[in-house]
Length: 391
Ligand SMILES: Cc1ncc(COP(=O)(O)O)c(C=O)c1O
Image (tube, rainbow, N blue to C red; front, side, top):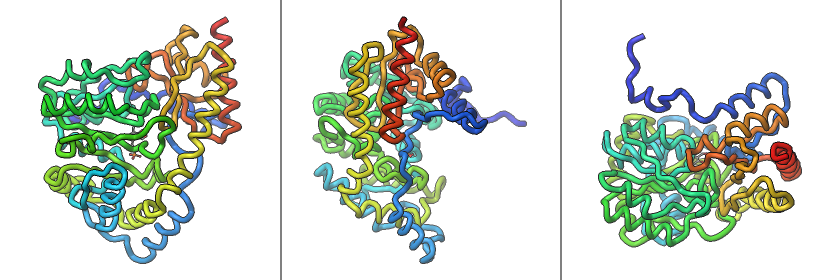
């Protein structure tokens, strides 16, 4: 075989991508061992039947050919309307590109924002694909650690210290894996650094409908930030449409025009019947989005209640998103060791904190993605398991 391009092989150079516990859990399940799965951010409900109805109607109605590459006008208009309504920032179709999910939007945004060989900053702990995405576009992936003792709000001086010579900064609020929602103060500090060092800000807002404490503020709405912010959005989490692969980038018109050229040369757009279904889903409005988010808010309350009945595992209070982070350092194990032993001994699968960066070492991320009773039961077993390790 000829040599593979480093552009590809550098995406996960170590050969490890942090998903080993997840893969092992899936293998156990395939081999017939029941495992309580609390790893990935996948709802325990499927895409709503009404959305599937809209998809079916669109496909049978003939929307199966090539769709408009930047997205059908009606969907781009609806996304623009939604973003403007939620943020107050004037937004038109020319600010919107429809993408095959948030992940493709992250990749495309960084191709736009970070020239090859430049530093692309991101906050650690991070969503597991971030460093690979930044390396994949040829950037120098540069983590900035947030700290558990700050509730994982990043320190502005730490961002400032890395900003010189960087091209972009990627943030994610509400955050996966920590559940932190950035405060106005944090976001204003970030905005100032971006302006001072002429950085693009890529704001991953795929959890913007899952906020339990505080408020979601889009940094695009802060003074003079619309011209340097690329917002990544997605239907995956807000509408339980993970498999449909539909999301968007909202940004300055000129950037979006160039990103359309990228779409023409890569994805060639998103299937028309999927876009019609996404349009139908968005038009169900905020009440529908609240219904999709409600189970996670309930389970967060269950977690708070169970965790306060013991003192070996510490809950990082999640302000948003569909996960809780647990500090298991008292057990003396790393997050990875704890997750592996929990899988072997209790058949419960969680993600090791180390999968999300060094700042999350000694933690585990527990997705709130099974029904309330089973979720409570799994957490109680997890705490009892941790207690045995602390004896
Ligand atoms: C923080 C974050 N960003 C982006 C994504 C990508 O989502 P999708 O490609 O399904 O829109 C995820 C998925 O889990 C995520 O957690």
